[in-house]
Length: 108
Figure 1 (tube, rainbow, N blue to C red):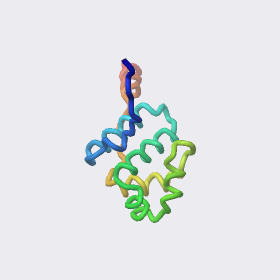
Figure 2: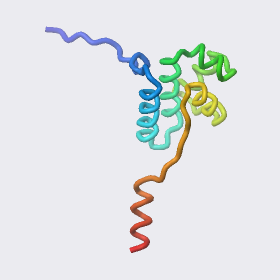
Figure 3: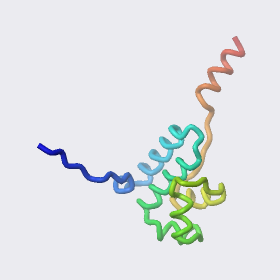
Figure 4: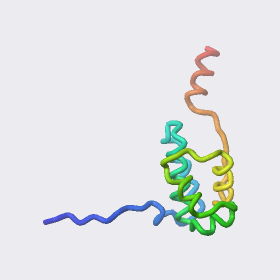
């Protein structure tokens, strides 16, 4: 019996803002500092929301967004901020667990 498969596109499954935020957070954690990987994740979310709408809200063309968020390059931080805002998301920062462990070790 032959196994049949279909292409998987995460954009087909990102339906709510909460799912989009969780996906982006997971990608940031797994990125190991790879900005292109994070840009690709933003591209997935933008496609889920609708690239035309995101382009309109960022003031960038659809073509330039597809290129910037393809994962083949690292877009400017300005572009990242525009896209995150257009997606209804926000950036936040927290202390890495490894930094907390190091601080505790220094005190001891």
